[in-house]
Each structure stands twice: as C-alpha cells, then as structure tokens.
Length: 271
Image (cartoon, rainbow, N blue to C red; front, side, top):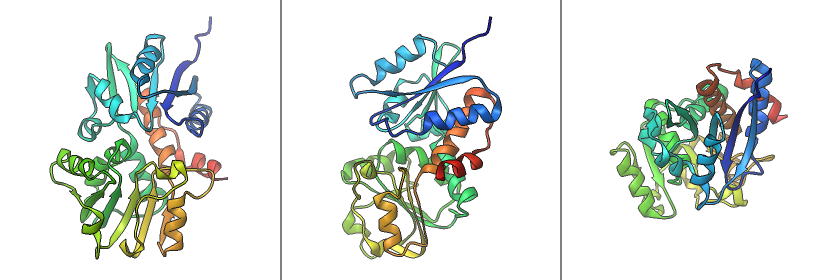
C-alpha cells in the first residue's frame, strides 16, 4: 500500500497571499519528492496550539511567517546557529522527539541579492527598517558578508535597541533624527508596512549613489517601498519574491535532503 505524501505547511497571519504552497509543489515536481503543502492561518493566541497540533497529527515540517517567527523560536528545544542567534525560526520539524528550529531567511536573502541580483554586500553601509522576526532572521547572514556597517531603525525605538543589544554590538540602533545626513548603500525594508499598502518612515536623502533597496515583502506588483525607491533614484529595487523562493529551497533541503533549483521557479513566478 502506498504511503500518503508527507505533510508540510506554512503558518502566518495574514496568509492568503502566501506563494509558499505553490513554490513547494513546484519543488516537489522538480525533484520527484512526494509531499503535500498547505497554508494555515493562526491568531496570536492560537499559534502555539496550532503548531503543536500540526506535529501531533503527523505533520513533517512547518514554515513560519509574519508575525510568529519569534514565537516559533521560543517553542523550539533545538536550534540551528542562525535561529539561535536571531531569536527567530521559520523552519520547524521534530527531531528525536524534540521540536527543532532553523532560520533560512538570511540564506535566502543573501542568495537572492548576491547570486540573482548581482549585489555584493561586503563593504556596504546597510540600513535595516524594522526590528521584528523578519529583520532578525537576515542579520546573521548579513554579518557573514562583512558589510561596512549595519544600522537599524524601528518605529518603536526600544525594539531597535533590543535588537542591537541581542546581536552584541555588530549593529547600531538609530532614530530618524540620528539618520539625518547619513547615506546607505543597501536599505532593507523589514517592516510589515507593504502588507498594508503603506510605507515605513523613509527619506530619499538616505540613498547613496548606486543604492540598492530591498523589500522583504513581496506582491503581485511592486510594493510601495519598491516604487518609492525607484521614484527616488535607487539604482536597484526588488521585492522579496526571490528571497522567498531561495529560503524555501533551503527549508526543502533541510526537510527532504534535496536542494531544488530556485532560479527557474523565480522566473516562473515573475511571469
């Protein structure tokens, strides 16, 4: 008798926009792996219970998206170095009876910038907008690329300070006032503003010559942040679709032991 396909899912809020089920189904077709992948909506109060129930019912792996990555990290008994350092997890599975968490966001982010867009991070001045789980997830991989500096701004200043403290001084928190007169080579929007069709607090004066702007959020058309960047002279501006596919490929590798080719999937989704 044939076994049912292994069950995987992504959980978040909102979740209807997620392309993860399509991406993983395309990976399965590409690699010949048998799996089923769905999207699950959770509330802040219900996330932990939903995740626990998913694994008790035989789920093989869970991706976690906004706003539950830090809650997922707190649930895990085992953590990869990136997840431990970022205090955020986006890829869960049960190993030897214990919930294990990884964070593939940073790998996906760097691969999309460096390998797909041709943007080098080394020696660049980086500004991160936001201090939630999405930003936390990319910091360890950013650090490994040796940027000249990493600065973080958040609407709630205390969260930016906390983020800087958690990473031991490798990045510095700054207020909007402290950003006046400064310029950056790479500006990353890690806030959820694009999901609501808005912009974070931004200033065109921050864009250095040749600046790249990157939105960790993706959509069917340019996000407000990408449109703002292009309208204000950024040399390159991209949304997070490439990162989404690249981080999904790393999650797939962790779960299935097979690394899919992300590039044709990115091209297909871009249309």
